[in-house]
Amino acid sequence: MNMIKTELISIDPQNIQQDKLSCAAEIIRNGGLVAFPTETVYGLGADAMNEKAVLRIFEAKGRPSDNPLIVHVSSADEVPQLVQNIPEQARLLIDRFWPGPLTLVMKKSPAVPLSVTAGLDTVAVRMPSHPVALSLIKSAGVPIAAPSANRSGKPSPTAAAHVIEDLTGRVEAIIDAGSCNVGVESTVLDITNGKPIILRPGGVTHEQLRTVLGEVSLDPALLGKVSESVKPKSPGMKYRHYAPKAQVIVIEGDINPAADKIHELYNKYTSEGYRVGIMATDETQKLYPVPIIISAGSRKAPETIASSLFSVFREFDSLGVDIILSESVNTKGIGLAIMNRLKKAAGNNIIKV
Ligand code: TXA
Ligand code: MG
Image (cartoon, rainbow, N blue to C red; front, side, top):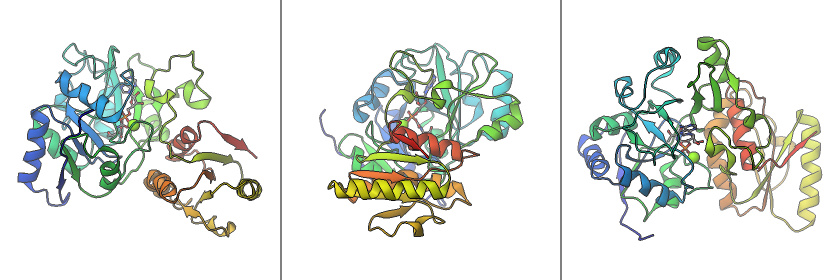
């Protein structure tokens, strides 16, 4: 693709400079691409109602065209134009979790271009809580279609530096407003048929959804390997993504046997000449007296692990490791999203102890 000039726009999320924001909004209105922060990860935005602009997102990311995009709104009032009807469950969820990291899959209205939904008859919608994202959507005056702002296959970006690394020369502008809080992407919830199904675990937890909806199931594809022949409901989930360049191996099980296994594998791969890094936690990092060890956060506060997971992946890449041996975490709460991303990164290279 032709390289273009990428403008870097720094915005203070606590004190948004309107002139800078208007610049970015105008780029969106003119069919351009703007990467912007959300509370989960950075998104790569375009006018969701402009087919041509949306197609440029796929090109800039190198994203397969069968993987649909999330449409971002700045208010629940913008939802009716996007969907056929708003199910009662959506009203309850919007009341409780918007703005925030919950994406709702509903039947699409004809107004939404098919390139956004990759030909599906459903559309994924979310209202982010990041002040810069909300102001950008409001100021653009159109809903913004945005996948995560990484090159396809790379970990999602949680800081502007990651976006700059991946998308410079491919987008009109990148807004830098610091790092993202949540760190893993939104929860994608299918509510098209009255039986809510989590297609992707994320910032809003299974437990939280249950408090509002009662029964909520997990897409079977989340629990095991997706075979090539099955068409998963959330097309994005079939790709090995969120992945660093290094091969990730997840060691699943209680800490002590897991640490023993990690030591064993560390010695094996190191003796074979590989550069090996270990991903652990604040509580366990002292178990591994090796040169390349990174703590992703505290087991007592798993949201800290979610928040730094993707930047830790990128850090290992910058250290040039060939293999990352990673501990696992409990799948309660946000832990489900963390383990989902780890397993995706590992391409299901998981060892149970
Ligand atoms: O937190 C997030 O959701 C971030 C920020 C930027 O909002 N966005 C994000 O977008 O993670 P993306 O494109 O990287 O992931 C969107 C996921 C994919 O797995 C995609 O397949 C699924 O949502 N998805 C989108 N539309 C869908 C639909 N109509 N039905 C089922 N799954 C859908
Ligand atoms: Mg993504």
